[in-house]
Image (cartoon, rainbow, N blue to C red; front, side, top):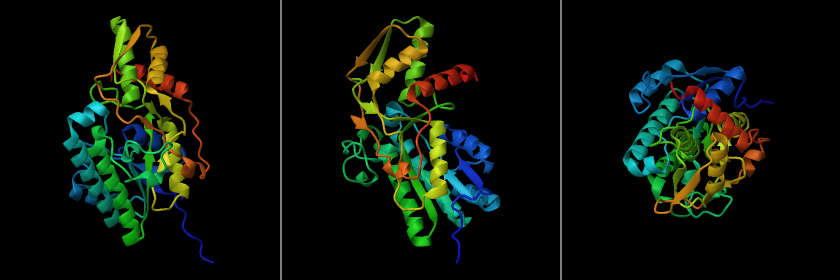
Length: 316
């Protein structure tokens, strides 16, 4: 009887594309702790938008497994301001890396998408089969379309070439290594930065976008790293897998939590002339739970952990 090869052997050499990002850095730490050799390249060393350079690197490095965690990401403001960049940069990276991985005979690959691929008014919690069943949220449609193309690209390589490639769709992520830039950050690090600056500046008021009523789900990057590893070890199907915690919170509640963590005691004012984005975005994580995964980091603990990390690193 022939035994099928392990999906993620203990000796597997793993190339993490985007190892300095939020997910990539957490995954690099976790895989290294698990005993894997992790291959990395900085953006200065390798521009993943360059197909020739990417193909040459993968041909020489010959990783056993590749995780595509590199992407141009940002919040509502960034997506609304630079839609062409979010569409073109992500398409270029995906085309370059997937073609290069196939040419280098990388048989195991994990593509990381985003929960924004789902329709704006998808039934909650959102199942994976909701993909392409309705209009997207306009504020991040270009980014979402690039990620949807990535899912199709992975499926196509599986169908045409038999590759054991998979896709995961994470919810809103946060943690050490996040982006706290006021112009390009996602909601949670953006709130931490906004409230911290208010405390530091002695402000009695913080103005936030929207109504505060949208609900969002948040997963710590360490939990995301554990989920990615679980998928690499046990999942081998064409359909994407949602990655989240299965619980959501109103943005107003999140703002109150961040105010408490940062020590802000003033007023929170909601600018309802600004967009809310998708009303609710909670993922159905049944497929992931069948693999035995459960998140380990509670939101309040994770927010405090992330804020401590930023205080230690904000000057560097």
